[in-house]
Length: 252
Image 1 (cartoon, rainbow, N blue to C red):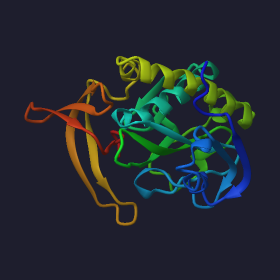
Image 2: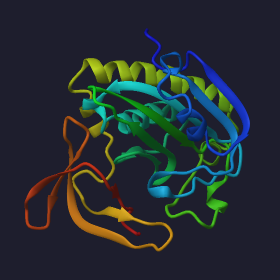
Image 3: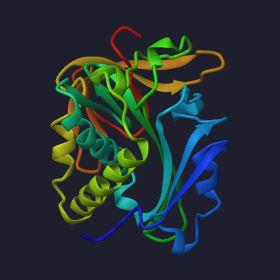
């Protein structure tokens, strides 16, 4: 199987963020597929400029890709799908993908994905994909979390080897990414695990952590479009496609 990521894995003890280091490598074809791993991040971040808070023992890494612009909305979802597949054998709890970039276990967040795209004038773009997976931490003890969270350790009452976990992700992502670029219906596999599908929910269009201001709309989530955008029906019965934003938890 062709290796998309993981040909080179760089390990660090403490960094500002793995995405910061990965961005320095964007543009060098020799670094396509490189994974950068850190034990600790002093300025880790998630979507909408939120801090990514980890209290140790988690899988914190970023990787570099060059890919077709037509998959721009599917990259985070495919990454989340791969994460879900490596978590699934370890727990019997229900797993779902919360569009566009989170993995939930029994309704609690266990992983988040952040993609920074670097677009030029061609059909191919560069991306840095940042991943955080709660492996051996205790996120329920962190008081600043916006959403309920859990970890692999909490779910299974055992500790995991983080390096092995990242290697498993690399193997799985290589498989799923090849399926993505060769199968126009791959999005349906992601859709089958979509959180809140068929339900009414709140879509946050704008969110600013510093002032907590948010623009929201209530939508019924119908599924995914083939390009990874979210298919919804608004309260007037009109079908729309959403390319950015996030699905809020029902109690938030």
